[in-house]
Image 1 (spheres, helix red, strand yellow):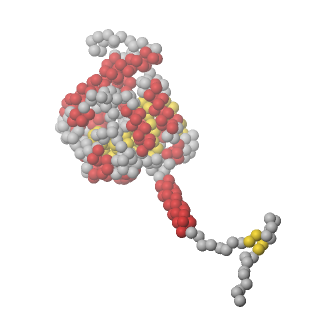
Image 2: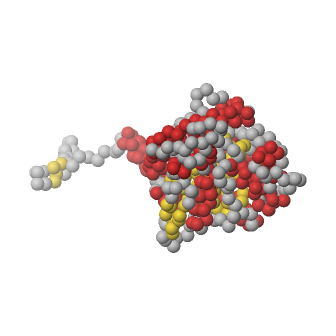
Image 3: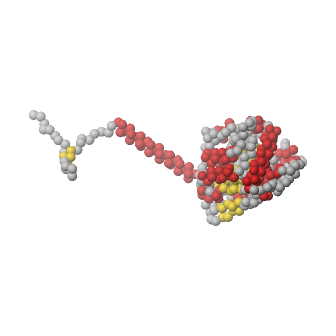
Length: 427
């Protein structure tokens, strides 16, 4: 006799009796989906932890704004900067200044300073440990270009306290012979001195008054900090940071926040003029009134180091009235490491423009990367790197074109230049 049929237990509900279905095992597809969701969740947690660790490891630029240093820049072109401290917070240990000035064609076509600043904003480390970054927009004669640069800086989180805008007093410039306009308007050393004054007033220990177009990787910055620690212990108040120039348009694949020197070196093999770090108790300054392209920064380095460090350039020393006889290395040892890699003789060598930067030098001194020139069409940039005469020719063209830019800016301001005969003729 067959067993009685069984029925599923029924349950009552507000909608009438219901019958529960027999339980079924999950399908393989469902298992794979659940496994994938768990893997994705684990990956997201790992990513979040790594991001949080990086965020906690580095100091925030925003924390440096809490120091309350408010920058105001006079409009008379004299380079004065006043700093007012409104909060008791300690200042950062370093302040890195970068100067954004005028493009000087044909070696630097219009827009190169903006493009390079934008590249640094997008690809540098978001934070540099112990460092505040300040941008100095220096006497840009094209008002549209100035506004464009300031907008880009603010779009990347820099406030008014992080941006110093210096403007030209065209009434003053108009009274000068026109062959002095370039020095009066470019005013790079005046801007560097303003950086030193601003950093000292803010109480920052190490001041880096650097050129524009500079790029710093995370590795480079850690090495710069290590060099500062070493020289701090030795009582040295000034040290050099090696600079390399890229030989082609920079690419994020080999120049980004995490790039190592060995990644960069094939694209920037030659060493050029150093950048400099000053301790806040150093009294050194830059000579004002020296034009772009006339060794305006090198004059200060020779004065600090002593001409013995640059004895292989007698004509330059004579032109700068800094020639010493006999050459002496003593000042190099006074202000720079006498046996280290960051001294005068190590950073600037006999074959100035052909000198290669060793890995050891970069890792001992730190380094900065000078971004691409963006030369105008028709410029042989490879020959410009190799030939001093060709580079001088380009700079002479640039000074003439710059004077025309200044004349156009005066016209927009309604300023009429005075008559001058510095070059044997009237304006």
